[in-house]
Length: 335
Image: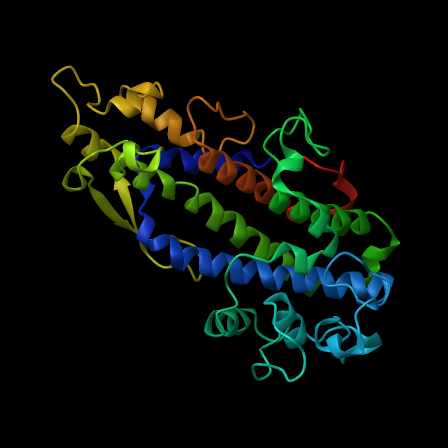
């Protein structure tokens, strides 16, 4: 458990991310996620062979010859995808012809690889069905109560976290076997770096909903707190994360001061309905967005908040596993 993560994040109770910077952050961590998937794909190909691995962009021999450009059979060793081919396929593009020139391989320069993905706009949310074809038969409702994949111990599972954790489980299982000999130190370091960056981006992004909630009208969106826009105050903060831009955060103390009554209570009825009456209540509510040791109460958090919480939980565990030595890895199954 990465308890060191949660300490600094208590600052989130004081400052919350402003929504308009979220696009830049999500672009950055989505690009890092795509590099991470490549590193795991290339490693699994080394272990199982490109034609036998079925986890990430597997060979599709069931496709017709006319569909060869999307069958994931590449021009690399053993017909694996090259790095550029992999990224084009991950973006849903065909292989013939390649839609972009060769992209920088992260083994040569990680930062330029990220820049190339951003330049090509290969930095949005993944198309899960393309990454792992079995996802086509899995619906979000399968994880809901009564669904075939519902787990009462993990009631907030989603299609995205399900696939992401399957991949992480497979990767870490190999790290506990002889297969780890095929995992170079450089590749492991790139996986650790990109995993940490995605975790950090999702940690920061988890607070995006707070700023939006403060200004949105609940009657129009169903999840707003309805504070006047002119009474939501911000601070500019340096992320401290390589590659992440500076961003603005909601200053909770100042915003509360402008929106509380003479007794020090928040004036928003929608916030009070969620048990948020004081600054301290809001701080605890915000911290709950990234406290993956405790299930979020649906009465206090909206579905979007809970989805963000579940995604952050998955990446926090992935980052912890990536930093853990192979000899100490235990329970590589679902969290």
